[in-house]
Image (tube, rainbow, N blue to C red; front, side, top):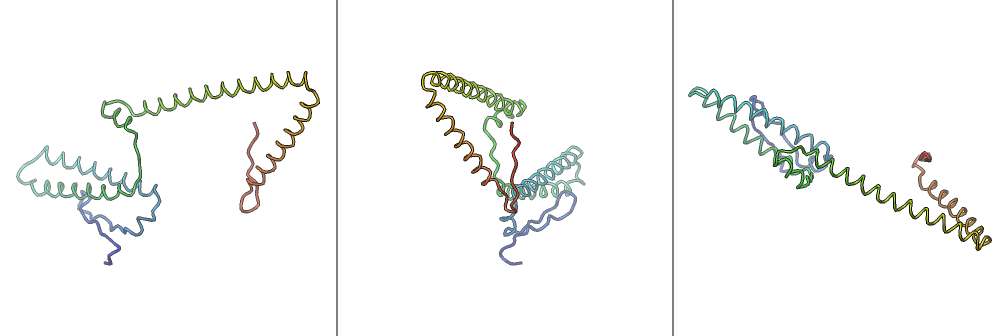
Length: 185
């Protein structure tokens, strides 16, 4: 075995050996695969903890060797889990961990964040609507006072909007020449 490979061996709780891991290939793995490996390791660990519970709950002197094997398997799998988790960059907000520690559902955090976003969105929409109303009222007042200037302003705005639309369409072309189409509202 060359120095670029590390083999993680241990019982998977059922007497099976874990598959070798290649650190070089692991560096190129995508995050989703790394996360799936950690999830699989967590599930194995939970299974081993359950087997350990069953062994301990019906312990007798004859079950001492299986108990030690299961403990060693658990330690090996926990070590494997730590190594796998180092390749995952998952950040969990402290608020979520505090909710879990308090015995609450972490979905409450998500619900709170979404409600906060909805509230901020409504405030921003209100401000946008107010600016649109002020702009409309200002244009009406200006049109009564300076009709020629407002007409030339509207022509300039129309040309500018057409140019911006043309530029956006030219930038939204795909490498194969197709154009990304966004439905207009």
